Image (cartoon, rainbow, N blue to C red; front, side, top):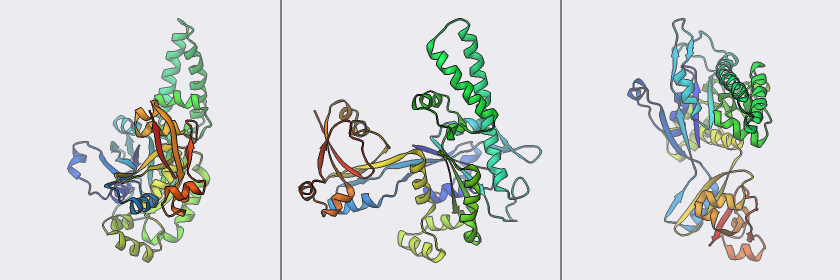
Length: 361
């Protein structure tokens, strides 16, 4: 899974990228037009506990790739230009994090002259809507011309769906929060519409604004939140400082500032909720591993995430939930005696925290 981080100049998007990936950006890469990529482990206390119980040769966390999306430029008038290069870079991501500046700093002036979080959010939304609308209109014209020559059923189904999208976009509504059917989403995702991508709006505050962080997030959420649009707040400078500390030092630092979780923990938790993701585990002396799947996936589909052969040759899945396993002191035998270990068929819907062993031919 790849998540793109976007934001106006001086919003703190690169600061967030550094904080969550624990990397220092290479200025030379930007001059060469190269985006920054970073892969981070998904924190999971359950996997840590399973590692303690099994002492495996290796532990493998689920991972997420973050991209510091580049391509925005400053126009002659001083305002930000959303270049074709930038919009193209945005398309390559599964979800987006829009970093919005809330902090004031005279040493780093806002490119538009003042701090206004709703204006900055609208700037991206407007550009994304216009880009999607142009694509929809082009495709609708093409389909109408094709239908004059052929009466393909696929085109007949596609046209009203795109016309629905056109109507929504003309009303300045992003597509991500609309209740499309599963088969409609499958078709629309082939277009990589920008407003269809799940969006996390991340408000960047400084340490002096801790008492207004919840208020700011609530104000934005009231206007912008939806099924695929979530709002969170973080403290960019503080999170960068924490990323350079050891785990013990970071905990003390957070306690001092009254911060409950790091930007990374918050971002991943919200991203999982936004994208409908969950984790299951495979365990043993060789390896303890977390696997990321979509909610609603069956045992057979989840087995296929481990290896394609496991999907094709699936027989049964041995399943015990993490909570039940730990309750019985990490013993499969005791969990089985208590009725918590069971055999499930291919249609079993895997739950977050299930520990699974796949039986296959």
